[in-house]
Image (cartoon, rainbow, N blue to C red; front, side, top):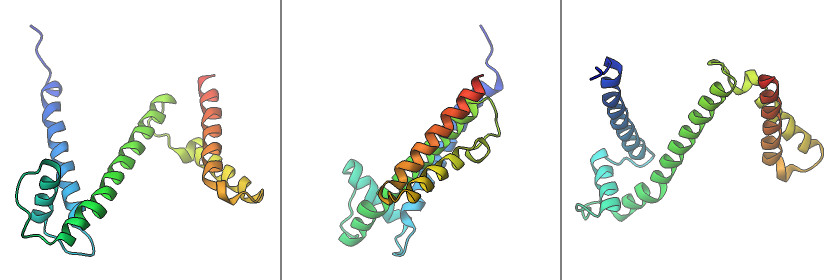
Amino acid sequence: MIAKSKRDITFPYLLLFLCICLGISLLVAVSLGAVKIPIADTYQIIIKQLFHIGNVDHIAKSTIAIIWNMRSPRVIMGLIAGAGLALCGSTMQTTVNNPICEPYILGISAGATFGATLLIILGLKTFIGFGAFLGAIIATIIVLVIASA
């Protein structure tokens, strides 16, 4: 039988700890805002909305609407955007085999700026976002071609 290394044993515990920290962070993020809502009420609202468990009759309908319709979608989109940025950064570092690469060093941000500026000059202000995206894609392709050569 092959003995497991210390790293193999501690990784699941680290992953569990990080997931718990993420859950607590999301709960706190949903609780914070212009309207003061206690974390316990936020937790009860989320559990009631997701699993239909618990009683939220003592919480105002406006508070439930604030948590469920306004804050939760923003926090979830922030989570998705952050995960996407982390995934893209990791993919970029792996692709060019450089642990310190970033969009500014590789010229991807400059490509996006060029694409947006070009469309502004051409008077196509409606498509600035698309121009930035296209400029970043072209710059990325150029970097990948150069890196693979």
